[in-house]
Image (cartoon, rainbow, N blue to C red):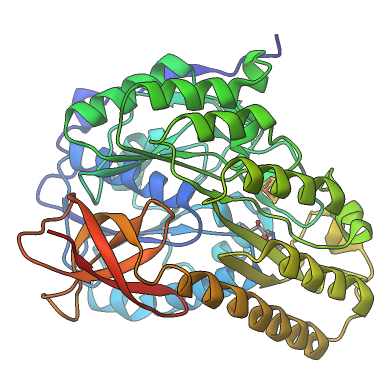
Length: 459
Ligand code: 5AD
Ligand code: SF4
């Protein structure tokens, strides 16, 4: 068995339990579901300390930016927003501004914040969430800039509180970090090595959530198919998936899968249990073997296609989504065309597409990149057009079908229209009577748009 990480339990010491009394907080969250889940934890800790949620960032006594470092554009946006805080600080010097998440793990960014953004009072890293009470305490005691960033591979803290935005849908971390070191990606540096939670802790969380009326659980990890490898488990993810399905919870989803570790046994379990939703997000990144090799993805296009074929054969109704990067250093026109051909083969329901963004400290950032930005933009546009063609076609095929939708409540614009996700993970807007958030509603599809479906509740 490989080295175990530190496993501890969260406990809020008495001296911190009223630190947030009469104070409010507001959190702005950027990036992936890992950050969304971290924000739930941070909110849980703050509320245990007596803080209450402010109605806006302007009103909050404690304003936190939970940030993403995957692309430079996301970082620039956050820095722009932080720049605007100068005025807020001027209006009210008692406010406390903080930054956490993946940007906090980047040395260069932290230096930039120290130099150019003195209005940021606190910075804490992705491995320091559970220390938030002591961090805030230190700040209130000294009123000097407080930086708490660990670069260790991380630990696992159980029994963390959470404030969930929906009572019927919940994210559960099954593992943290990533060991894959794809050459473009900063995540292994900002989130540390792969470390899995123990299965009994995950199952306990799922069962408690179900007993409280929860309907949908989303298992989270940067690379869920590697679940349990650090615990010495051979096929840990498949076993976990089966055990979660056996709890009888209505719906299970999981993000994100990696083509290299995806096993046939996981496909079999998906097929065997109707409460594991028939949708799969399987990032491919490129349709060229040469580009995949330079990205160090560890699989070939042929392997990816064979996984796709196996899934479609075993679960014909499966919906399939992916992530694709264009303009990776040295990507030729021909290699880009191979990506287009792969999209034509897989006919994705949806693809999240990105222009490559060099990240300091990653191997790809040192590769020669002679593709002009104009060319990268043209490639992105062509890719998006190709993806949209198939998404549209796929959506059209749902006309007149009946889908089971987990209602998330009435839409903001029109109280008569409800929205929610179907088992296939299609966003459905629908009408009908006697509908509440958290209901599983049978909906007949009456119209199809590029990204959403319209329908009516079936009585
Ligand atoms: N540049 C562009 N896109 C990136 N991604 C990760 N790193 C980069 C980068 N440096 C994309 C990948 C990944 C998704 C979450 O973000 O497609 O799957
Ligand atoms: Fe990044 Fe690759 Fe890990 Fe995904 S699998 S988080 S792209 S290093």
